Amino acid sequence: MSSIQIFPEDASLTSYFGWLDIEQQRYMFRIIDVDKNESNLRRAKLILSKPLYPILSQCEDTLQSMLLQSSTLDNFLVELDAIVRRMLSSVSNTSQRPIISNLQSNNSNSNAKLFSKVTDELSTIGWDRVRNVDDNFQQLELACTDNSGRSHIVQIELPSDYPKSPPICILNVPETNSKNNSSNSSTTNHTTNHTTTNHHQRSKRTRTVLWVPGQQHLRAVLEQAKVWLSEYNTFWNEFDDFDANTWILEPVRPSRSDSLRRIALRKHCSVEITIKPDRPRDVCTCTFIGPEHIVADLRTAFHSGQRTWDRNLTVRNNMERILGQSFPSPATSSKSDFSVECGVCYAYRLDDGNGTTLLPDTTCESCGQHFHANCIGEWLQALPSTRRSFNVLFGNCPYCTRPISVQKS
Ligand code: ZN
Ligand code: ZN
Image 1 (tube, rainbow, N blue to C red):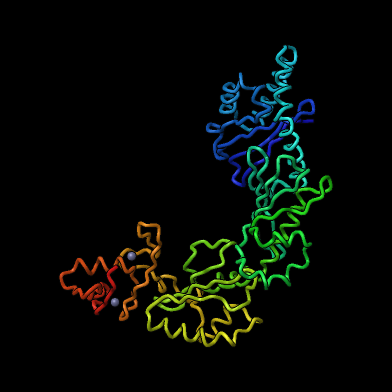
Image 2 (tube, protein in one colour):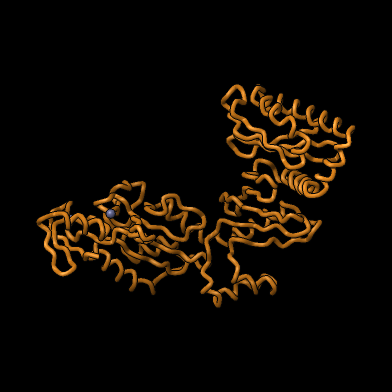
């Protein structure tokens, strides 16, 4: 029976972690920078864990060059196994052995114990679900599928005395606004009293697992994560609906923790929608962006239509009904039709140099082109035809040449 094992750390098979079991002691190591397309391991690197280091420190260079020359990882592992055994038996014959034992019993012994406990548990969960493990085996990232079939990555932090103390689970979920405490009280009575008291102060992203030492397992953490993630089902349904059926202008790559989208509405006009994670079917917050004469009408329509908001409909359906128009769909339009980038610098967000992000909030009322006030201001100032009255610049739009004015900051 082989006592040496390795497992890939990532799906692209570029790094591995593994261990050797010798005399009831587990010795961990990692092999990184493996190029699976290469016929050898020219760039690969061996990283020794603390318990292995005192044993192999003298021959680390030898091992490294053996790794580089090995044609496969398996070949190298056989040699590594043989070398560790040889080194252990040689030190056991000398007076050095007690020094190593001491080293191991201080820190490394508890590390090795934690390591072997965690690897056993990960084996039962399935290595295909392991996305990342840190060197100390205290921070894990595991794949978890929620009740609606969405994939998530759950971060788990193990205390150094795991499994005595409970693990901490970090979820990629939106921050909920603690202002809604009063309305939450009816939804939190399924939890016990002592957890509700600190429920509101703590971020909902970081949660302590309900834990019975000695009876639970990392699998239980994933089961609890699944329950916690299901709290956001309706919230994610709403955004999945927008993501699939509208042009999302921002964020460029939405994450499960985002509660905001900027969505194309018409040419040169978009709407920023914020959905409350804990009350996703409520009236959403909307900011309309575009030429003032269009945006003003949309704002009025949305404001007066709010009282007809129907929680049985999706947020998208409600908005389309209230605004009296459908969102442009990727199936029938092109994203470039709806760009609202600045016509001078071609960016949407602009850093003003003092840590403030500027948006293209100035619009040409004739052609609808957007500009950052700073950008169009500088553009106009450079032209001899521009007139200045107090702090307002009057000139011509660089796109349609019709009159445009901008406040000089
Ligand atoms: Zn600009
Ligand atoms: Zn214009």
